[in-house]
Length: 200
Image 1 (spheres, rainbow, N blue to C red):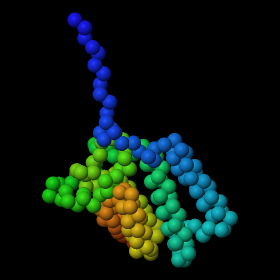
Image 2: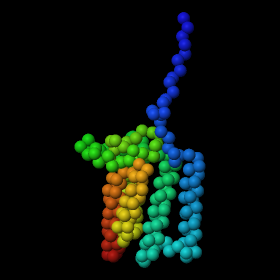
Image 3: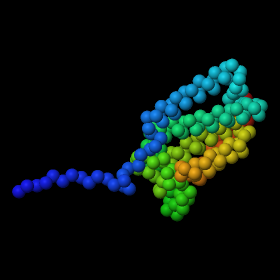
Image 4: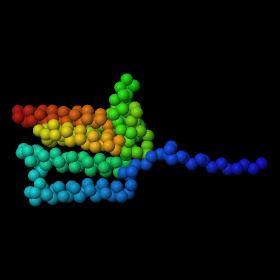
């Protein structure tokens, strides 16, 4: 009795695993090169006195310069992580805070391509605070700590960036809450440190 060897059906385009358009070799090369080039350029300009970059800025020019550099690094690091391994922030086992069913409507503010088509399990429908969200808190917390005087501009830039992301379905308007949380924490930490140093 002859048995024909059955071949497994090929996955249809509709059900195939999505691929990350940012994970190509060219994009990895571009993001890594840009990050290194930006670092070399910034420190070269600072060492030659062209760029007024200070970790404790006093004048408005110094504050704006530091803020611009921090946002530049934020953008480049975001693109670098997206190009290297999105599973760092998309693994279903790495959700920081799960969303109770009562508040699931809050997740409707998240774009359909929030994880940039990463080829792995997603947490968009069940995770309230993702690792992307944690990165927002940490990043804006650092900015709020280093440039507390420009907290309002920091929040505004973050909001404009979120609107831009919404054009590509990468957005999550809950990020505005995480941004504000980070900024508030950074500003308060800076004030506490300043008060402590004043009594030393």
